[in-house]
Image (cartoon, rainbow, N blue to C red; front, side, top):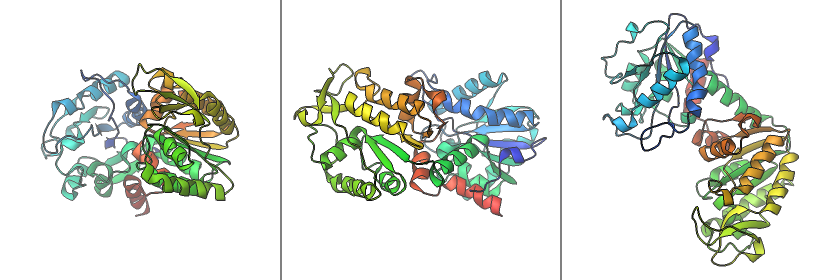
Length: 397
């Protein structure tokens, strides 16, 4: 993939528009509970400021009704967090795309937060007129929001078409490089861990990865469907019986290449799905009709740890159990530690995966942590991401 990079563009004296991903979690009082994405985007903003640019930053936050301001979805908390990180004020500008905002009045070395871009009517539909109006605000457009790269929206795609210069920020460029490295020329064996509640939400990624990887590990509710396909007893665990044939097809593809899909030999069960549920370790053949499988067991964890130790490249999306509750978190903890201890190039993505990495303290021992969820999965699947494609087209023009 060839895109123009921010560091190859002269920014001094320019109005620089940076699309970031500040769609971060907040508590009921509006306090930011995880500022990882803001910290990840700060280097691009600091670089532009040090280069002598006037900087505008925007992001989406949740799914507001377009054309209407919703104070609950304002970027004001993100602006305050960013201001604390940068050590300078970051005022919030509302109604910035309606023609009333004069970006030429911005001072070099200043930074402003443009209010939630999804407040603008036409943002999600990638409206052409809106894209042109937004692009007219800047001399240089920078996309540094990998987490939204799979969305064709005005601030992720449209602006890239019409801004005088369009380039990738350091975070987006690093994502492209790391993902390409992990899939196009990986150190072998290439192992992927895909976990989640349902096969249906990740069937296409499972099928795509089956063609590429040497070994595929499934976890969570997905593993339950694969266990069902193998004829195992899963009690009343979450599973999708209608997708048993699809699971068997994935297994067949992997086996045809000499690999396999290792399934749990023991599991952690409970009689109810709750934080106070009592955990019980059972061999898979001993699972009762009223059991819920909520984690893999110690024997299964040890098997996966040994497999991970031999891997050359590891791609990880999804915890293997309900790790939020400690009695069902041992499997994910062992997997996290095994990936951290491995000499393989490891790449992890997805909100739950990042939460698990943080919980078990291995953040600095994963080779690359992706800021994307849906974008991460679609890239792995081999899909063209609209925002990256837009930058590629500008670079080729």
